[in-house]
Image (tube, rainbow, N blue to C red; front, side, top):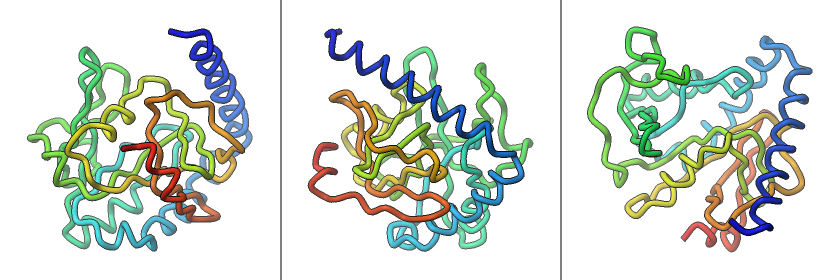
Length: 206
């Protein structure tokens, strides 16, 4: 690891701490109300309207609650996938689910709710991935929690779908510190706006 990479990792952690402090100023009830608005911006997005198989996530505290999107997908008979994570080998797969109920999901070793059973969906069939993040900038760069799982998943051969970063507007920053392998989003949705990332910027992903 170069000195520049170490500096970038330190800058990322400092930004995580800053965003966490921002989110702690908002109550859980307020975050849920903002989540509905953010989800509606995704539902109105062209990429969502045309997607039949959509991967999203089981919400953690201080993340945008995606249950509103999931319910719309279930009502429209779309395929909803959640990530199943192999922590030992640093990989994840999209596994179809029929509900977000506790009967269908189990908490893994780190407390993330994941599908209890089911066969992974081939990544080639995933049309859209809704990606959580700690922070984003308007060029589509994302700050995650540090594991790199989404960067590896979205950057692998075979994935030809779109990805939408989902966050609260207070998580949008001027510039996210980034490493060479960090994946760029196609869109970013918040409770206030839907940002379409410049295609020239997105070329970094390929």
